Image (cartoon, rainbow, N blue to C red; front, side, top):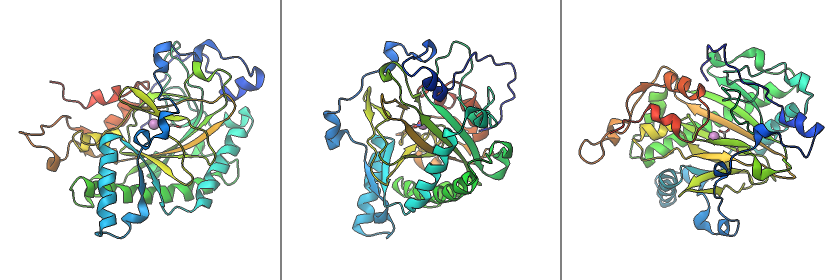
Length: 364
Ligand code: OGA
Ligand code: NI
């Protein structure tokens, strides 16, 4: 979430989706309507009943006691999940349900405030923190059926204190408490991911330095024509790891692209959805994939997600880890670059599938 020195972007009128449905609940403005090809093929709900079509579930309690059979089995599952899906859900992650529900509550209260109040924390064109729509760079770009509120959390230098809201009163406190827990979870997950790649446990933590953590709250109001719009455009995440929380009883909204079909991710109670970001794809020399995903909306139900992006410090040099490259059998697929430069590249382009990774690919 590096700041962008962009002052001359003309983005046109960006309607606030919550306000739109208040004034004209059945109208979907042209700027939100997607082309047919963008809507894609979605796996039928019949098929998603089959386990084969569901993203893997990792039980973190089995990883708390190292080196027994359960541990190795779960590590194997994790490695397959990262290779085949780029996504998995974690259960028994140890984060208190109160902490999770608390941040959800303040986030919902934030989105429910009058627009004038939310506008005190604007996401200016070309920036990615604050309230509004990110990744809009032109007047003719389609808009997502979503209101976003994004904040840099850690290290403190990436925070913009003016954007941390004074209302709801407990917003900052709740987000701090939640973010601390998620940070610990990310550190743990990176250890397990290192083990699953045959690396030493601390490998990622040692190279990441003071890791960057940012949060984005996505609020998807109901849409009278859900088939015409997208909640969030297809993209991969620029992070190392992403932790997505969907509120309890949330309808299906997240979809991931697998074998050219959009597979819905069914929310599980008390689970968190984890996905591999572009950075781990590069570090693992493509063994683990950052998979393209998007969000869709629902005719009746709103949906709220709280998404944490966890990434190396901006100063860190990123390149495939030498342990995972072999000139003969597994040549290096990505060049070396500075993570801050990648972050800048990511936030200064619109979301477009996995296109952002072209920045790093070595093209033959
Ligand atoms: C994201 C994201 C999906 C969702 O914020 O990067 O992929 O369901 N969100 O909100
Ligand atoms: Ni994402």
